[in-house]
Amino acid sequence: MSSNLTSLFLATLAAAFTIAGGSLPLVRKQLGERGISLLVAFSAGVLLSAGINDMFPESFKLASGTAAIGVSAGFLLLYLIEKVTMVHACREQGCKVHPFGFFALVGIGFHTMLDGFSIAVSGEARATLGLVVAFAVLAHSFPSGVSVASVMLSCGYKRSKAWWVLIVLALQAVIGAVIGLFFAGASDQALGIAIGLSAGTFLYISTSDLLPIAHETNWRDYNVPAAFTLGFGLMLATALALG
Image: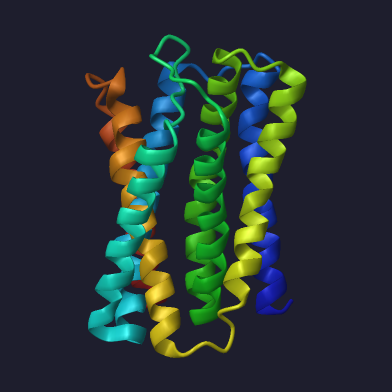
């Protein structure tokens, strides 16, 4: 399978994971508050470790000092998208939920698109890096789907409409991968900055989104930091093994 087809397949798989996660609240099944916290903490560890130990070194290798521009831009871009145009999805039914309208959906769709973009540009740089990044994306796609569907239901969306919105948002990962494939044949400098941008989004998602959610109601549970450490260590071991 060519690298382009592999990237598209992995992005499609990420979309499927998002839909699978969202299906739980939509069919009235729950993982439980503690189960969600552990899953989110594990995902945060995977994303943070992938960004620090896999993506940033590859970005620096390709783009040298300008890799920092990509990382900074990725972090700031998601921060601005999330805080200016959307309210981040809250997984708890009882939390304070702001209007979940057009701008929130645009922000979530852009966020999902960046996941697919990350898979594609990382795969262009190195096949093993693409697989590592894809695993990190898959790890957080499932809880993201749970989160988005839960908030739509909390905001009064009919289940039929919530299904369609969830599917459209999930498929943005495939669109992001298609955009990322345009970096095939790009200069090392451009590809390195693109990977750095993706790394910056991973750092933001893990530290500003996932970890606060994981600890929000389970700050006394030692299993939450244990799950985070497990995810982080798993990706670190992978980075060392792949060299």
